[in-house]
Length: 237
Image (cartoon, rainbow, N blue to C red; front, side, top):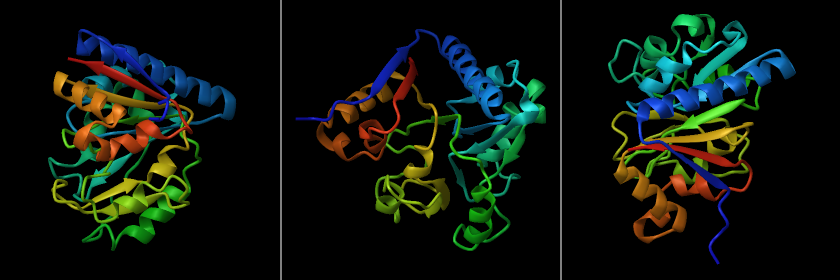
């Protein structure tokens, strides 16, 4: 029998409506964290999909001075690179009301992620897990975070019982070397969201949920089949 997936889907006919709804939900989560613990922690994804979301979220009424923001993964490039997720987060999310949030980058001034790993692990060790919210994306190859098919450390990164928070990742489809939070770290969250756009990704996700064909081996399936944290999928065409 296939596993019973703890996944709910929120579908929108317009991606701006999705961005508004998810931004409001994330803001609620951050406000709850601040009310309960005096601070909140948010992990977001890079790429092109969350741009509208970041713009909406940056204007939400949250005590942003008490919020830490980090990335679920990062390309190993400096912020001067157009490929930098950190640069995109700073340009679109850490603006307006959110300009006072503290950003915790996943890049260090080192030639490779392996060379910067000790410093980076010390940095993320100070993050007060659990996250209040984690927002994942998904690529056309079924990757999420930097869990790429064929990744050199993919089994280690997907070990849901690991006590390692971040790992380097190199994969044929990844482009640059990457640094990524592990699945076990990302599952230490009060809320987990998967933000996808487009009909092709909707079908890919459906196949991954059902374990059909090659999608049975997509890394995102490890997120969908885990039983620790419910997954809320936000989708628009």
